[in-house]
Length: 213
Image 1: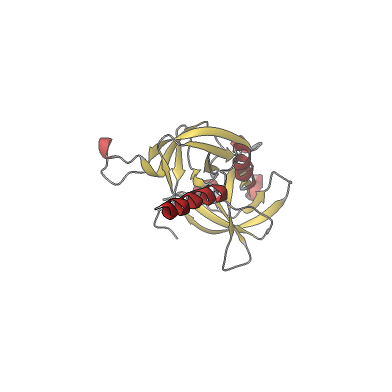
Image 2: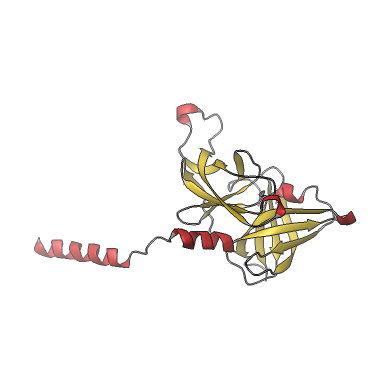
């Protein structure tokens, strides 16, 4: 029995010693800032439109990096020059549209710039979880705002007591304005990407789980 207690005690001791400390708030914010960029669309006649976007890292099938934004930032899909602007160092990269899904309000772009960070995706959260939203309101300086998860995506027909308290995020309560569409919504504790902004007032999110590839 004493041997059993000793083994258990050592396991607990080494388990605690080897546990990785959670990231600090400053580390989480630094990571979310590194994975959020501004997207600029220049159209014929001098028209210019800007939104926000999130870096998803590399495409394993090609020498390119993937960028996620809201479909309506690029709508209507006319001939336009797309550039991704990196606010940390002022770099720019040409972007091409790979695919879009108007129903889910998602668009996937590619750039050839290798020097980018990568957002870590996570689908589920809990009601009341704190989030950071990183985006470029009114096409200006990058801004970080704080909010909470205010609604979870529910199965068809679920209401009231049947509505889940955890799952994919549908709505957040945060200070969102024009130009923040496509900006990342990140878990405030871990920096994981929970979705991107698709509308404002109470922000609606474009989330994982749609039928679109």
